[in-house]
Image 1: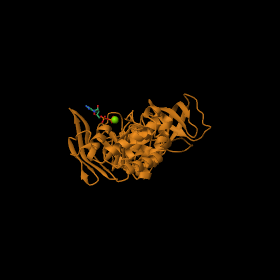
Image 2 (image 1 turned 90 degrees about the horizontal axis):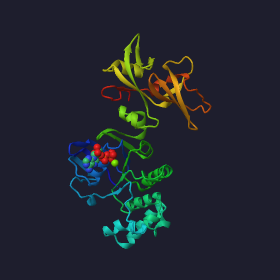
Image 3 (image 1 turned 45 degrees about the horizontal axis):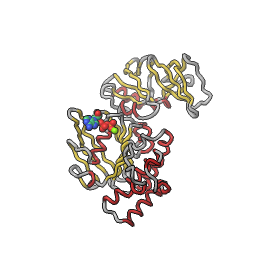
Image 4 (image 1 turned 180 degrees about the horizontal axis):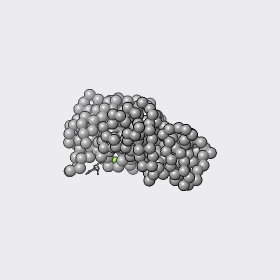
Length: 364
Ligand SMILES: Nc1ncnc2c1ncn2[C@@H]1O[C@H](COP(=O)(O)OP(=O)(O)O)[C@@H](O)[C@H]1O
Ligand SMILES: [Mg+2]
């Protein structure tokens, strides 16, 4: 296995800047996910690492080699795609064997590797079948097997679970993560699904419009989003984001549409004092907005829009001025009427503040 280092890579399609000076350092044995909305440049980045697309600037290192000018077949990578791209006329065994034959691996070694991969993927009983005799999940397992037998330095995966139904996707997510740890493999994984990124990765690289927004552990991305985009993209339900102004009125207040709070913590007061721009965005996740106990500060009044019991957690959608926000409660007996006014407490420890112009986080 190997580390992968992207340095300042750039890709244009005509006038479209698809990948905008991206630098990323992926450690040996890490599971790193490139995540972001459709069109943000994930596939282009992955294909540049694979050598399927030429880069317009920067450099790519796999292990100790700069691979900019190497053919895909010489980069020691294996790819797994959304469409499994299996050979329809070959058996599962034949599909696993083909890449090894192509590389001149001898028969006993081929048999050994196929057996090992098939066992770890649980597809031994399928080895004599053809792809059309397999379910989607089984086909995807074979596609993974075909990558594993190669024993590459790096696995590159582009939305490999996207064609599976929701339940199987959750199952395969866990399997893939387990397998990666077992193989101690370096995996670069592309998905548009923030939950896949959060659950599977050692580190997450969030992209938007070809620009890397943040590269950090799932925990940091969730609790310390670098900017408004990351805050809005990662986590479900997404972080509540409210435009606010800093107002000096016998102490520093945050004033938004339909609410006004006076943070008391030294942490937030220091940030408000130092903020160069009075226009901010206040971010708080549903867990940081609780039904208020009496006599707490940072209380806002909002109108219940609807509520959604999910079992352990009930999400309460409320209108704060004209903006809908989502709070939650773990009180499973929670009931509310549509249109009812409720008091909500914003937990200061969970408040994030972003500069409204740069969108950068001020509170990390
Ligand atoms: N072959 C191509 N020719 C022209 N534009 C392309 C091509 N492939 C991708 N693009 C554009 O480059 C951007 C990034 O695409 P892509 O890397 O496929 O995004 P993602 O995988 O994140 O959905 C998009 O704006 C897309 O329309
Ligand atoms: Mg893509």
